[in-house]
Figure (cartoon, helix red, strand yellow):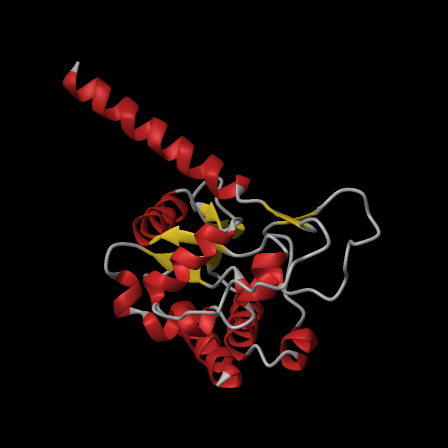
Length: 219
């Protein structure tokens, strides 16, 4: 399935390239394509920053049998390869676990697939969620800015699950008990810091521009 997802991504980019009216593409990837890495910072005093420059390690994903994460990683890399050197501007958005009113129940299969390995992500400070409306706004913001500043990859999340109560509540809402939180105590601090500064700056700039336009119209 991971190979099929990668081939599908290549074909989407090829279709964009061959369509004369399409010169910009916003590709939806996943935060899972960024967070699973072999190299551990446990000998460092400061937590390692995980941002849009980070890629998940495919061999690690295979070893851990994290097939959903592997598919997302392979697909995004395939999209970048297919777009390289072509007359098409590509930008990717990497959302965290998508949530929102009623969305979890309608998307339970995808949520469960995303959460394979959730205990480890939770323990390392890498389990994050994002409301579906913010994901939509992020895509619009990126697309509108592709003629100027938008480029590369964008990590998109609005909340990091850090406390036991948050993990248990997420399990309850998704109907998947004992999938995220474990009673086994952890004897180390969080080793990673998620960073979504790039998308936050872009979206803040768009909101300011929108507000200025409204002010000019109504004043």
